Length: 314
Ligand SMILES: NC(=O)c1ccc[n+]([C@@H]2O[C@H](COP(=O)([O-])OP(=O)(O)OC[C@H]3O[C@@H](n4cnc5c(N)ncnc54)[C@H](O)[C@@H]3O)[C@@H](O)[C@H]2O)c1
Image (tube, rainbow, N blue to C red):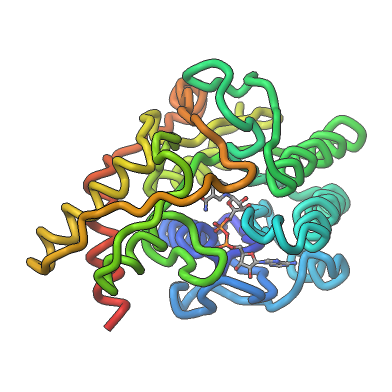
């Protein structure tokens, strides 16, 4: 029999890639999403069932999960929203996760909780292991750290079968391009209108950018590995790259792909509040226990993203 999975936030950026990956790998997939963000059904394989609902509506969520073997919890309010609507972020990311964990416990369903590298704050030791201190810089990061603790609480008190994964910055097709967009789609938007790319701070801040298919593979492996239960895993590329390097790479790749003249100037503005200065994942634990191995290097991933974005901006 097929393994039955429910993916909360499954219409979002990572969620839609994950849902499609699970479906290709023989899972019976239901997406549970309130469509408050995300690109809707259009990026999801036709065989995937969709239930429109909020994780804050536990009765509806439990009905959607009745036959599920595993819930992948990705529903989230984004980091940038935590500056202007922090209560909303806390309500969904924390109370929502609490409800998902409660439902999974009551239904005896496994929970793969997708947290974030943001929980660490700026690296105090490099590369960052799972035992690195948690010093959140933003309300979003705090909400993700707290969400892990609720899931852990259900494990310890009530025996919830759970795994926590902490993806580092993921990028790729289907990333949101609205007000709350991340740096890579923002850079692409500027390239498209031939304006200089805007960098917050010095551009020397680093991230461990991970192509979304690698991220999703790590999340799926967290379910498929028996001895992962109860554990926490970094999911990253294991490479550190500065925002300035990302900007320059995007300028170069965009020029090579389109042959168009590009504004090569970088425009520096004030540092964003709560910005993490350095991130580099130690992925040895995920490699050893999950057999996780990222395969898409940053240059290749950026090229894929630009090609897709050009197609989708027509
Ligand atoms: N994007 C990254 O670089 C990154 C890095 C680390 C961790 N993560 C984690 O991965 C997960 C997915 O992130 P993403 O970037 O795909 O986000 P996203 O914003 O693209 O997707 C989130 C989805 O959750 C849905 N949602 C929001 N509130 C909901 C609610 N109350 N009930 C049901 N659905 C709701 C939205 O409609 C959207 O489809 C999150 O848990 C996030 O913390 C993301």
